[in-house]
Image (cartoon, rainbow, N blue to C red; front, top):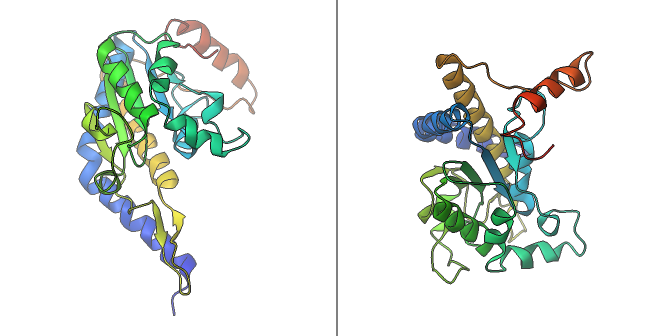
Length: 247
């Protein structure tokens, strides 16, 4: 009998294949959008609340990553908030997402990536609406099957996928967890973090490839744990200071 550990591994593999086969063309287009944003000296922002923010952290300030990804972090939406249930309440607070974006340096022709698995909570919806008002392009990473089965928690009745210019489906299951073990009525083992991190790295690769085709040297971080890494990264901060708003 196959172990449940192997079952999860095979589930992830299946979802990865779906993403590669069904979303790769769209991922390439998002890479082009990111590259064009960089070429125009505009700014790229990324947002995710609670566990969705893990994918934003994957994109931000790390070895081999783009120096120009500006995260929109808010303390009340991070998992070190206590009580942690406050994060769920703040996700549902209408108007909050717009205020977070308004407090940033975002302007017209910037690009915003929002990761929200259900796409139903007000914070992501408000942020997408505000971004569109500003004239920004919005990229959503979401679970379309899940999102289409739940009701919006926003007064507009909209969900994230209905407000984005580009919608990448993470091909997860309803409620995100994917394994139902015997003697349990609740599935375990979510897939959105591992798949979301894969998706944003595919976007990164597509972006870098597009920049190279344009003759632009991609601003990629070296590790701070190798000799010369800090110095190299500091040159990126200085060169791209108009597109970096987190340093």
